[in-house]
Image 1 (cartoon, helix red, strand yellow):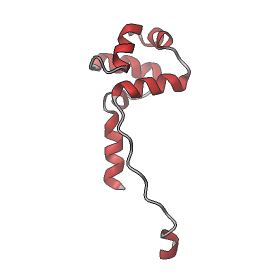
Image 2: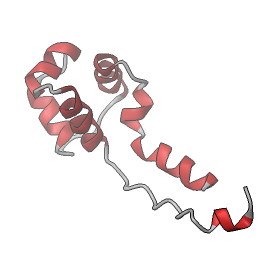
Image 3: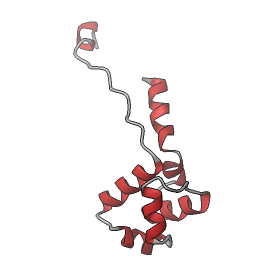
Image 4: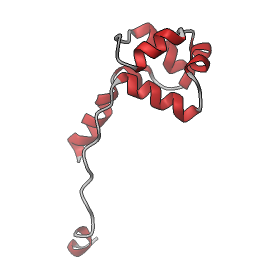
Length: 92
C-alpha cells in the first residue's frame, strides 16, 4: 500500500460503551426472544431479567453464566461489556 492510499482511510470512531443490561437486551432482541423466552432458556425469572436489563440490580457470576449459556457466549461478554471496546481502543 502506498502512502496516498492511506489518505483514503477514515479513522474508526470510538465504541459506544454498553452496560450489562444493554448487552442482555441487545442479544435477546437479536435472537427475537421475549424476556419470558430468555427466562425459560436460562432459568432466571422474567422479573430479574427486567431488573438486569434496566440496570436496577447488578449481575452476579451465576446469573451471567446462566444467561451466557442461553446465548452460547462467554459470560465475560455480559459481565464486562466495556472490556472489548477498551481493547480495540488500545490497538487503534
